[in-house]
Image (cartoon, rainbow, N blue to C red):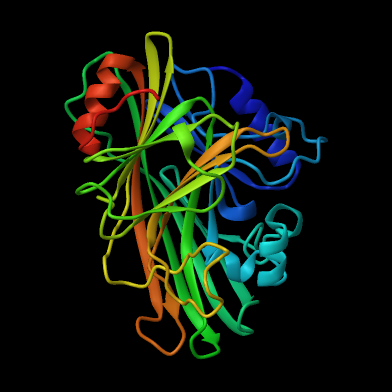
Length: 348
């Protein structure tokens, strides 16, 4: 294995972020207590991180911020990540500020073994649109999982599960909070977003899609190139609960496949910044993002769990996703991806 993984581990350890390594026969996961984040995913036969991380993180003295990996935010973004709705609409980039109780949070380790690690934190947020507060406890569990079966011998696979659980402690009636899992990806690939039919609605959050999005009868393809700020969303009535990020490097390729829960009719609460300030429900269970600002170029594949709503049951929400990371010949991975996703896999 390349030593980037060990440099990253040592640097995060030197910062006091308490990294944990989960090792399988086919690769390694690097997870930190700080921010309860999966920072790196390495397969034995690849020389790089299948997730995005800022290379500066490999230097303990760099002061690199919290970019990269698989993290948890809380939706709706427009409620908690700007001082006011007016600030968000005036200049979303200038005024954006993740709430510290979410990112990095105050996570502590609750359990750790050779196959899993678990964290918890308490979070208090106030919806800037309507001045309603909510207090809840977050639990995150990372564990290794069984790999896909029936794979050809030339394909390497490592699998893991991620569970997010949020439990209400207190809050103002009507306050809302939903777990929002964000996996940051290196640019240069195509995110596949399969649907059960041709999407009835595709939400656009930022710049026009132009040629970075393909909408088909079987789903949506989203190019991640770091050259435009684009974001799309798919509804719970359209998404089939799967996603896949495909990157080619000559005849070889990597593929991240993720299955996540989709519950049409439950409250998904993320909305664009131009939505009415009294909007309590959105539509999107799945989101894709292409980042173009600053020196970092990456993308994101994201999914939401249904939200807590103060004054309504249930008072605990949880969701588990399964991720399969694969490397091998591009033709083999395209076939595996097609069977898993239910749509053709190809490079845009």
